[in-house]
Amino acid sequence: MLERILAGDERALARAATLIENRASGASDLLRQLFPHTGHALITGITGPPGAGKSTLVDQLARCYRAEKVPLGIIAVDPSSPFSGGALLGDRIRMQQHHDDSGVFIRSMATRGNAGGLARGTLDMALLMDAAGKRAILVETVGVGQDEVEVARLADVTVVVLVPGMGDDVQAIKAGIMEVADVFVINKADLPGAARLEQELRAMISISPRAADTPIVQTVAGEGKGIAECLSAMREVHARKKSDPAATWLPRLRGMLRERLLEQLPEAELEKAAREVANRTTDPYTVVDLMLAQIKRG
Amino acid sequence: MLERILAGDERALARAATLIENRASGASDLLRQLFPHTGHALITGITGPPGAGKSTLVDQLARCYRAEKVPLGIIAVDPSSPFSGGALLGDRIRMQQHHDDSGVFIRSMATRGNAGGLARGTLDMALLMDAAGKRAILVETVGVGQDEVEVARLADVTVVVLVPGMGDDVQAIKAGIMEVADVFVINKADLPGAARLEQELRAMISISPRAADTPIVQTVAGEGKGIAECLSAMREVHARKKSDPAATWLPRLRGMLRERLLEQLPEAELEKAAREVANRTTDPYTVVDLMLAQIKRG
Image (cartoon, rainbow over all chains, first blue to last red; front, side):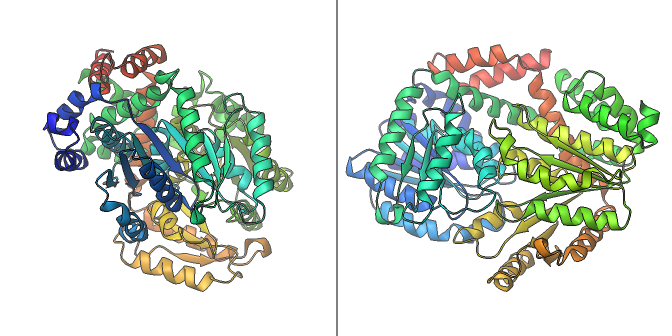
């Protein structure tokens, strides 16, 4: 299976993707063996508030990549909710057109109840696609929950999509999202307010030591405008970040470790502790100390 | 200090709040001693997308509480960003009017670089206010990042504020936020589309076993309309949830534990590992296994 994946066999890739989705027992051994063959793809996370046009942008970026014959992976990340099924239907139909293209491999990821697991699973899926020869991987997150930001943060390059005219709280949304943005896209840039939004972004960027050279790209994704510029901004940032690849792996390792640590604790014990704290039989600080000691004893 | 806090002394409360903000060494002992005196306040988290009018709603709820002479705490949670300072200025001015009211205690919380820490710090602050005799605590989150949802999730009751006409992705935002909502507020309900939004929400709620009785309240917070209804919905939900207080403490304990676990790992070691993984000298799965073993050895 390993060799078939490395050779780019689509059926082996699909089978491995299902192993990862199901967190099957063989998945982690496979990922371990695939890992030395990764590091060749540009993994881009696309995030931003609802209505910003993330799906349309992903669709257009996919076209751009395919016009260059770049082998492509797309991961659509569902929020962890019983309601997500219908919400993504439109996106799935839109992506369908890429389905007949054998150079494009598309998968959705859902949380199945575990927040940390979504980011880890998405990263594993992206690494699998990387090892299988995909040279660009687009990770689109739906919604604005913590899971989505966590996922976006694990990409090589994170694109934050905004639209003009987002109202009073635009300062706040930009502040929260600023940390994870490597590239800003002002989509629907034909709407009034695009120039002002860009000005505001530049003003904010200019006072941030980290983000001072964050590119801002204007697009009208629905009409395919600005997509090539977006792609070259992504590539530029990636080239720049490659000089410090450890910076990409630090949050990834932290996330993986956090999730593994939480797996150590039996849920029943946590529930018992929650009851005792709720009754004020004990206090949460003492409980957490005890649990920490217990995890250490193993 | 303990006794003065329990007696409701505002200066002792302010000093203790600063200890918690700074994570001073004495803070956790103090919190441990205060804990048996908590559990009397209704802690409400207010969250929702930018532009929904969260600050205005908090302001109006504060008026409502004060009209009933309920001792009140307000916690404004900043996103962790160098840009957040200015963003909250408007809110701070708005809250200023409550500052002369000695029954109202107001604090802002910022992350200082640690995501998990914000939720823990906010909970500690709320518990402090609870022990000091505040009987209602409003936690307003700004922005849409993971930290904010995490904070909202730690409240006794979480209010999700939406507005009509949020566009195409409204399904997605509702899906992501659905899990944490105990009360839905449709604010700016005088805008077109309020009835349709309520219909959509009801349709979604009706198929969720957990959320089937989630109240939906229409407000025009700017004009003070629907605020009393919102408050009684909060109180109803709280009364209902009190029958299973452990359910509130389970995610809280999990969050506290996760943060404490991550503190165990020296940052320098994580950075070294990130470099090795980035070079493909090793793989992330092996690294995380080793770190886990190391934490256990202590």
